[in-house]
Length: 144
Image (cartoon, rainbow, N blue to C red; front, side, top):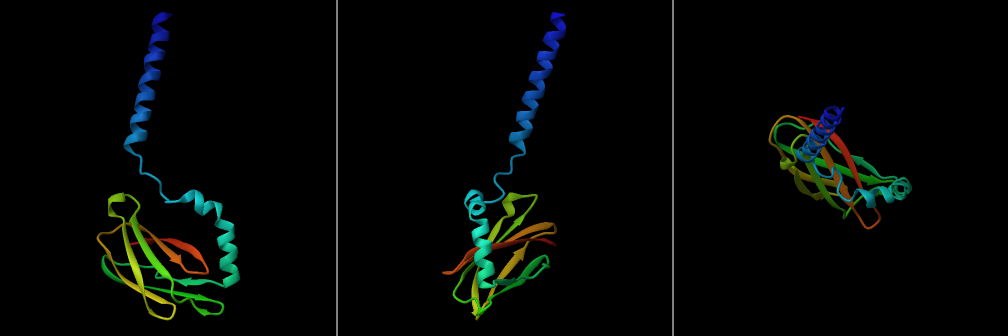
């Protein structure tokens, strides 16, 4: 009977050690920076977007290599001008491939940058919009 109890104990320890090893070796970090603050203000931000009539147009497809990225931002009163826009591009499988690109306003409500996608895969795109009237973001996936 003691041998059975010892065997169960040893098996339990092996399972626990392997569980901790797997958890630490596959940890990817937080997917969303500042997730608590963003989730706390989520409904306020969406309400502000609705009041402004915010419309964001971004490309749904990208290619390997250099891409001309253009985002169009408008509100119900016209183009959204003077905003600070940043595009974050990240490979879902590899955190080392994360990149960010600041966008420049080329005409009222139109923001552009060059984005270099190094290889095929599924990429997470996050457009952060910071303006005096709103601070929000858009996220989508692109299969390259």
